[in-house]
Length: 191
Length: 100
Image 1 (tube, rainbow over the protein chains, first blue to last red):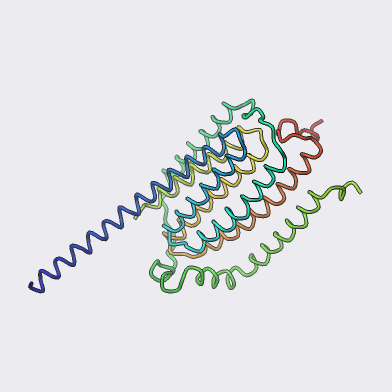
Image 2: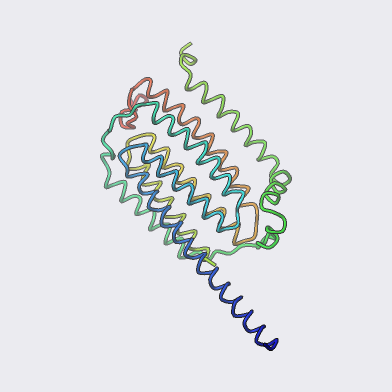
C-alpha cells in the first residue's frame, strides 16, 4: 500500500472519529438536558415529597454529567458528593422525620403562578434573543486544562485570586452551623 | 460541539421551573427544593460560560454557590423543624404569625 493510501485511510478514520465524537457530544447533551427538565418538572409536580427529593437526586446526577461534557470534572465530582451525598440526604432526613400527611398540593393561585412563570420565561427568551454572548477569552483552554488538571487549575485560582471570598465562605459555613443548631435545638430560644 | 446558547436555554428553562415551583406549591420543603433547582440552573450557566470563554473563574464561583446552598439548606431545614414544632404543618399558607 502506498503511503498516500495509508495517509488517506488514516485521515478518513480520523475525520469519522471526530464527527462521531461531535454527534456523541450532542446526543449526550440532549439526553442530559431532557432528563434534567423532566425530573425538574417532577420535583415540583409530585405529591409525595420523598419522590420529589429522589427525582432531584436523579437531576443532580445528570447535571454532573453535563459538567463532565463541559470539561469540569472536579465540579462534577463535587456536585455528586456535596449535592447528592450531603444536601439531599439532609432533605430526606427531614422529610422522613416530620411524618408528613398528604396535603393539598398546589397553591390557591395555581394558574397565576404558572402564568407568572411563563411571563418570566418569555422575558428571558426575549433578552436572550437580543444578546450576543461574547467576552474576553481567558487562557484556560481545554488543552491547557487537560495538561494542568481541572482540580489543580481551580485550586490555584481559588487560593490566590479568590482567597478572601474563600475565607468568607468558611465564615458562612460557620454561621450556618451555629444557626442550624440554635434554631433546631429545643428550648434554646425560649430560655 | 454543542453551542453555548443551548446551555443557556437549558439553564433558563430549569430556572423557570424552579420559580414556578416556588409560586405554585404549598409544601415548604418543596419550595426549598425549587430553590435548589434555581441554584443548579445558575451553576450550569457558570460552568458553560467558563468552558466557552476558557476561564476557570466560573468553576470557582460554582464552588462558592455550593457553599451558600449548603448553608441555606442547613438553616432552612432548621427553620422548618422549628416551625413544625410550633404549627405541626408545613403549609406555607398556615404560617402567618407575622401577619396582623
